[in-house]
Image (cartoon, rainbow, N blue to C red; front, side, top):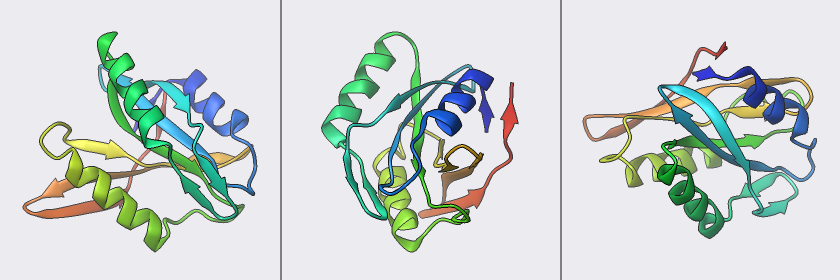
Length: 138
């Protein structure tokens, strides 16, 4: 995952510490995550539920100015560096819904004020593959 330093800093340092969990959408141009939108979704203790209508509107607006939707980030509690089973199911749903439009999607976990742990998904055959990814801050 290649990410602009200012976007990395916004995600890590502007995402509030849970509870509740929060998140947003990532956008890229030329293979670099260079824009983000914090979501106005439903925030529950231990669970982030994106506002799909809001994010879909943002995806359309960013596409009009040349940015491609490339994933969703969300916060976890400290030491929560791994994806939960619910996270994995949600990633599979999103990846399958965009399989004809996007080759790879990013789903980083944010430990607010600490770091970002990158994960990505892609389709191989008829299966969604979710793996840890390398992070390159540029």
